[in-house]
Length: 302
Image (cartoon, rainbow, N blue to C red; front, side, top):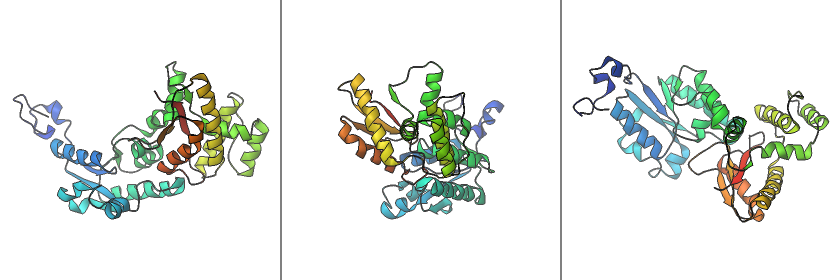
């Protein structure tokens, strides 16, 4: 920021008491994203006067691309604040929760006050943010409740549609549709819940697809696979054919409900590309493990 004379200053040094209320000098922030966003965060932190900051260094950063992915290591002002981890989010729900617990433990044990996760991926993961909210740390970004309603792309589209807003034509519940294709009534869903020992009760106030979604959520919470990748691929082909029938000649995009930076999405022009595209986006989002939330959007590529 700049003062009345145009000189760059920190909030701590401002003449205005109100401006000084934005002082961030007590903050010690752990940055858990990688790449240019992390480097830019460090530059901004220096400009605004953060007391201290640190970073994670994954095996991919330090072994596979020791210089390309972590250039900020060369001039990091706090070399002791580099914390090595195997990965940021792991593979599958169980490993993801282990990684989250490890990150929170690093933050608390090293005296950090805040965590910044950049944009997309971890910054849009409600489980990650909930774990931070339950700790002594603070998350720089939206709350977990906001992320649940708007951070996940499928929930965001449902919310927008419920408010009467226009959304890109397509499907946002392919996982539920795939489940309904196999278990197409109340009895079948309840039998599946009993078979997998899941806490599920039929809700007469919502339709079959929404009940299927509730059963899927129970499965995710217990790392139980309810719908297979093959079923998702088959249903994606079916739904894509329906979209192409209504919008001939258009391209279709498959996009995972989380993530950012261009990852977790593919654009296809023919149904023969669907199976590989679905596998690619699920692999990029690291949701191949059984019990992971593999839902994704199928929509016109506008």
